[in-house]
Image (cartoon, rainbow, N blue to C red; front, side):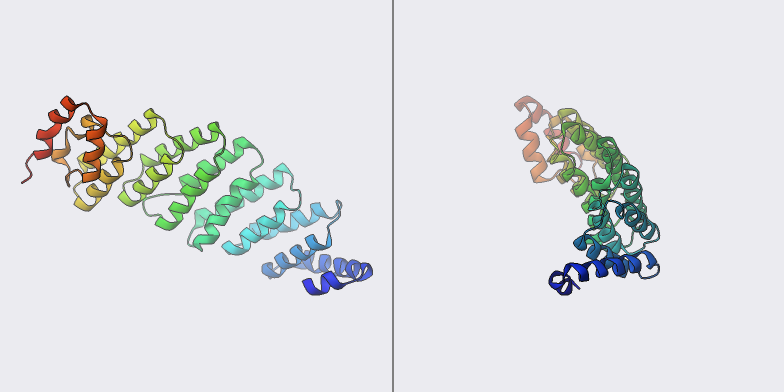
Amino acid sequence: PYTTLFRSTAEQRERMHCRTLELFYSSAADRCAAADRAEILLELGLTAQERPKARQKILELLASETNDLAASALCDLLAQMEPTEAERHKASQEMIRMLEHGGGDIDAADDMAAAAIRLAATAGEQRDTRHALLNLIRDETDFDQAERLMHTAADTAVSLEDKAQTRHDLLELLTRLTDSDLIWKLVETLAALRPTTADRSRARMRLLELLETGNNSEAAWGLAETMASLTPSAGDLTACDAWAAPPTVRLLAEVRKNSPPAAWLGVLPSLCGNRT
């Protein structure tokens, strides 16, 4: 189609435009073909009068879409058609709907998460969308998708206010997670947002809570290793003799670096505990 498009005369382009519009508006079951036709229409040039109807058609297709890749393509097309705030909001919500359903292609899920934020109409709505994306993450969530959702939320938080809100949302999410792998990824994402001292302290408290109540040695090792990136000090090790696994070498090195000599010496008995 594109070879024909670029070699055609103005009259041929006009006829192609009219025919493609006709086929586009009649598309129902074949949504992939509709997306292809919408792309051709963009190349041909939609008039200001044609754009509203074309946008409504894309939203109609999006509302019944179940294929992640096709949904991402439709959102990309919509973004090029000067959508209204109401249309951007509706498309963004459809992306969240599909992400909530889950089970799709990981790369497409990443694209949908980015599209959901990109199409949000206002800065406030973008923050709400990031919040909704992070709320999709649960312990049973596929790790790869959870990682993509966290990265997308962090990467799209540009302003100081956005970063602060995303840190808050990540810390709220941390209170619900128990999987050590997901927690490690969350703390890694948090670190990219320049957490405050209070943020790090809150994260450490949650990890300590899990360490002091858990009984899985592998999970305990992962949590202890994760804590090493949160500026730990000697006070964080006072109950480490009750952990299911001893503090990791990296955690001990960070604690020693961040603690006065007296505090470090004072915690050594806890490191011995009842371990042999």
